Amino acid sequence: MLSQKTRYTIRALQHLADTFGQGPVRLDAIAEAQNIPRKFLTVILSEMAREGIVISLRGRDGGYELALPPVDVRYGDIIRLTRGSLALVPCASRNAHETCANCLPEAECRLRGLMLQLRDEMAAMLDRVTLADAIPLEPPFTEADAFA
Image (cartoon, rainbow, N blue to C red; front, side, top):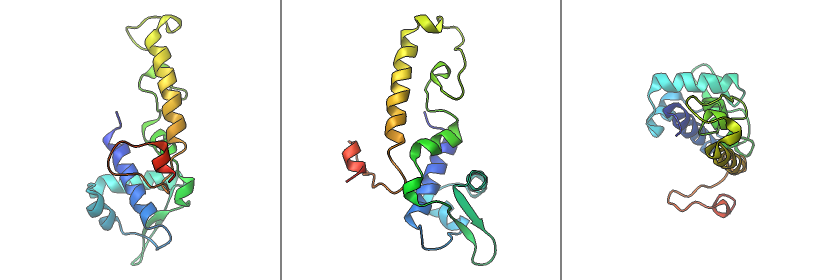
């Protein structure tokens, strides 16, 4: 499950993608439009600035904007930056692998095999979809929808 921080980050970056090229967006405007607590949004956008995803501009006409074109910001990268892994269980993570407590040895665990396959398929899809892609508001979402 995605953390609240990850969901807020995605919504904030989607907002900045929608206004890309129009100049900086004030923090309060993002917070209000995306229903994100202002303090939490400050932390999120600061982290994204440190990662090179967002630019922070100070002053009366300041605010935030994407540092990269929306087509260069993939959903998989956003989730990895905020959550650390796309895997649903620690033993299936590429970057944060841990042996699961109270489990079978990894070589004998069929659930791990399933989670490895799911991680790879989910990563492939999330790494193809960028902030520039149109994503329908109603299911079912298909890859064809994202690239239409």
